[in-house]
Amino acid sequence: QVQLVESGGGLVQPGGSLRLSCAASGSIPSINIMRWYRQAPGKQRELVADITSSGSTSYRDSVKGRFTISRGNAKNTVYLQMNDLKSEDTAVYYCNFWTIYAGDYWGQGTQVTVSS
Image 1 (cartoon, rainbow, N blue to C red):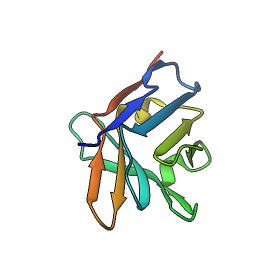
Image 2 (cartoon, helix red, strand yellow):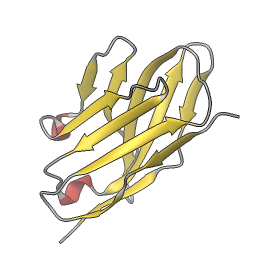
Image 3 (cartoon, one colour):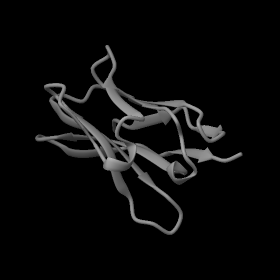
């Protein structure tokens, strides 16, 4: 079974940067949308950013201008560049691929902690 594997999380000071990566362990045909979600302790999971197969992107308001989602040269890879990180960005970040044929794929999550 194909799995998504995230990496790049860690501890960073406010104002710092991190780059998250997500790669599928195998081939996933016809990915329509790649997304990054996050879930902070005691809160619901929220959509952070997404990118469609045509390259259109969207962001939640609180990360606009600071985060950038992009697809890798490898078909089943997506990145999230996070700049000017704030304490409120602290969360477990999950990648998600959605396909019209097979539905959702999820990663296991990577912890991002923003603290001085």
